Image 1 (cartoon, protein in one colour):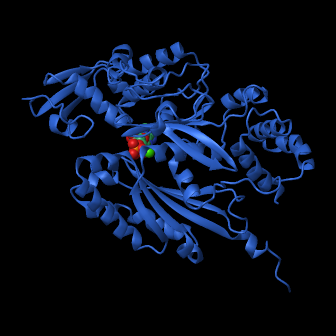
Image 2 (cartoon, helix red, strand yellow):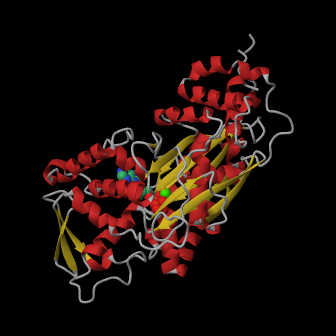
Image 3 (tube, protein in one colour):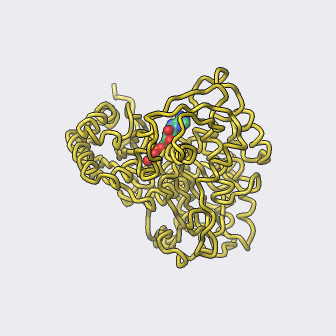
Length: 482
Ligand SMILES: Nc1ncnc2c1ncn2[C@@H]1O[C@H](COP(=O)(O)OP(=O)(O)O)[C@@H](O)[C@H]1O
Ligand SMILES: [Ca+2]
């Protein structure tokens, strides 16, 4: 008897790519896959697996570099299992390190080199196509995060509402800005119609996507990740070298003994350690959101700006233009605090946070830093970047933990972001007519894409936003299987 016919084997063939995100707090491995039979520009890339490396980030192994390499072994073995053997040799493997290694490199470049040597040695033992380990610049981290957010196109209801403005002839189609909060740095990246890149060239990244140039504004604030900002705030409170501090950013009843040398062992605060400080100090929480916000505000410098406008610390920032997707620690913290709904008035958000901060520690007794982190996020967004809530459309990404620069980095390095538009229109025009029907099948996201596409047909763009067309193009190819 003839075997039942399965799908043509060629149709099942997948390509894979692996990216290791060596962050300041920990390393994570991501596996991406896309259909092999489609040309690079049309297959939808999806994350098929992720693995969190046990222990801290690779920069924490400065004094025992070999352990940085060893720490990756389990996740790499898992990747060997997850990627089919036949594809191992063709699977590119990248490691990108962010602010933790940027800081280590500033502090002790030979230690950072040794960590990379150890990591390289460990990764080369695996059968994948190793493509190198390096530190990403802050601009790259911001820009690739933006590519990911726009590629994922995982828009929430907040932005569906905002999509109404896509129909306005004066506004043009918008890309989604990206907000990434790490432990040691934070990035903001967006396209603003009023920004041509000339005012502050170091904040400008140009992308050629589908025949159009995008001028992206991006800035990475080193030391403004949530873990380093906590050091800045504690440094602010310990300048006189006290033995005890009453810290409003921690719950009442919370007590912790902190070591001065450990606190000041970071380029973000080094040189500020008080002379003659004792070995330790005791941190006692008193849970006051208002006072905590005052301390957090004091780590931002709003006084000098040599540009037409600035966010903080004298850094140029053009007019905000949204929507924005906020991911990584933005999502972890706001999700934990049940504050991801940005349609809530700002005062209500502050009330909720104030109540959380004032909750006695014995009623929380779990992860002490969320009051501080929530206060920092709110202050960074509203005072630092000047978002106004609820009118600014910032959405905390549901798949927050998995959005980040890694996908954009891989898309770029594997040339999967087409720089040029195809010679002919991606699909004949009659196909657009079926869109409203398709739109109902997959719900919200489809509906939004429909809006984008119709807007395109009607020629309502002030200028062509080919990146969105590219997304729609990918999606159409997907659902129509062409
Ligand atoms: N479940 C979680 N809840 C709260 N914070 C988290 C959670 N998981 C990760 N984080 C935080 O997210 C941040 C991730 O930063 P990371 O990517 O390691 O640093 P960077 O991007 O600055 O190099 C860290 O501050 C880490 O503590
Ligand atoms: Ca990160």
